[in-house]
Length: 128
Image 1: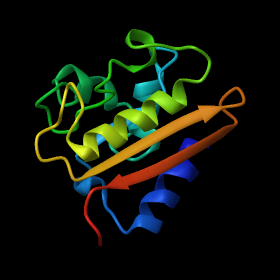
Image 2: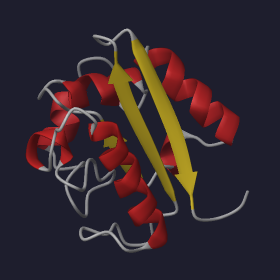
Image 3: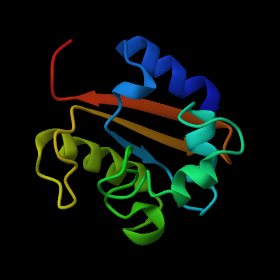
């Protein structure tokens, strides 16, 4: 489901991976950002762990990830997807507590149904 929703949304929005400034990936479990980075196409298979280890997803990194702390650190009340969407909107408005400087495009991806369903939303604060 990751491999279909992400590329479909990005293609519909007319963006490439290199255009994305901020990324939110559902992470109720620690391995999900690894799967997300790879299945959404931000990393090749097996490379997400190194991408994260090299601090690319940290504040100030190449692709800040889950800047609200994610589901494991921020909150996971059973409806975390709304908080991920909220963080993407805050990033685009420039009002996030851990603001990504100059962020223009945010991708928000979530999963459900025991990982059989997923959805991806592309946010931008500029018109195409």
